[in-house]
Length: 299
Image (cartoon, rainbow, N blue to C red):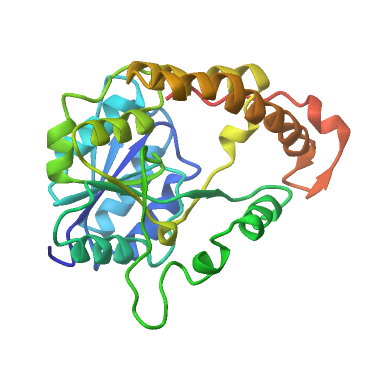
């Protein structure tokens, strides 16, 4: 596999506030990125204009359009249009670290037996009023803390750490081209599902394996965390629905009776803190909780 082999697909809809930062970070890694395909999904703001300015500077960046509204349609259009042997899919608000593309390419090059059909990394929210306190606590409590601290790589040149996982993380995932072609007709076009969970399970059900790489952790916007309680519950209901589609009945039950109530309670507490915070002044105030907000649309 060539060192410049990675296609990056970025579905976008009215993302003028974040698409520039996303493309700027990707453009610094063109030694390993073959192309960046931005899929405009009926944006009505300045998203297309911003992408056009980047495309003028970098021939590797191009924009295509998908008129069918929905992330799955934009995602599929981008994956179909890409030409690289490996295809990454991120979100418009994803902030990739400087080593992101190089690490992905190195991992795939080392996987000469094609043991892994797809891979993903985690996403850590940026711009939170409490900073990285929660992620730092989670890291300290993790039994793999020492291994992650070295970015999954030692000074002795050990292989990049990878863990077998059943699903993928949509803001930071990669498919081999042959994997995408194999599952292209399997993935669902429903907008009431988690498309990344669906994709990962399709990979697994087709006989492939999904790798999780801590070394390619990216930054993601906390916008979904600002969603109202009703909107959050509606969004999270996509998880058991996706599991049921794949006949993972035990997982769906566990998600419904344990996971969803837990994350909903956590969201309620987190939401109060996030809404009380004024990003412009950097101060907390109870009156801010009552400010009008807008929920993120469904995928």
